[in-house]
Length: 429
Image (tube, rainbow, N blue to C red; front, side, top):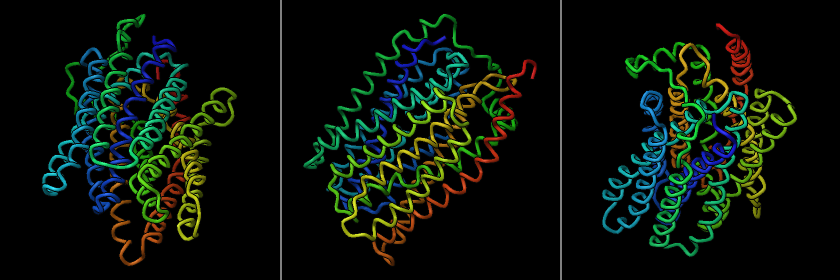
């Protein structure tokens, strides 16, 4: 079983993954919309593409369940992710040549990013679920996710300082540096982790069974199916602001590229604090159950989004405080949902942690791509008749409504999960 040092090392891999991805979903998005004056739907489409490709996550999980070492899938996926990130940055240089070339290279790049995230992230969570003692799983999930948020926030803040004044060459250099460092950290963190396990990570999946047969069997499990639906709804709300917050700061509040990137870092810092708060109070002091924290996180996120929308109508308003608060409540919701996911991953007659994590990861990825693309498209549609502040504000209010719907659904769904999880712990069930 994994010790705390090994869990921390796997957290470094999650940190590296988040550090690379944040540049694709936030910084490059801002460059396309503000510096290059492209429609927000273009980066929205590209980010949605990388999420759509992650529908293959269950397949990566199934392969890591039945293919021996999970480390090779993690490292290989990270290398593909790094390559795609550098290619996405290089596509910016092709703008003077023609948008068709920018689009073609970007589609290829974001396709590689989706493959890399799916293979690496799914296999990493599967390794944690199979090689961590059951009593440590929730804490291990919290630790690794906090480290990922720390990587996202730290990268956003550091690169924000490096990107001013903006130039395409400076952007490419920063992205390449982060990609190389992320891959190197992953290789070092994974060194002999699986070989040092006191016992092999359990993989009891039927090697003669096809992927579709295994996935169908898991979908027939009530716990897995209902949790998948909940993940899709809640993550649609969670990711809807991802592609519009930085453009909102730039177009309505006049933030520079570095300032809006640092604002994204501040938001992810709030996510870190929210996750840490739940981890300490729920795990350390046993205050509240997972459902309560999910409900509080969704409700608080909805309230803050209303404030962010209102600030667009107030001259001289500062986005920093509400953006940090949004991150805080997002973090509360996310860590409680992740804790439920880790607890449920090993439940069932056939222990296929990788396939289950892949199924929920695919639901999250589809929701993230769908939410991000819809948010960007709605802003584009509303800007002409309403104006910038009103258009962005309307989308933030719509996102708040989705969070309230997710909060309502959590009351029933997660209470069901609590009951069924308790039943699954009974020998013979």
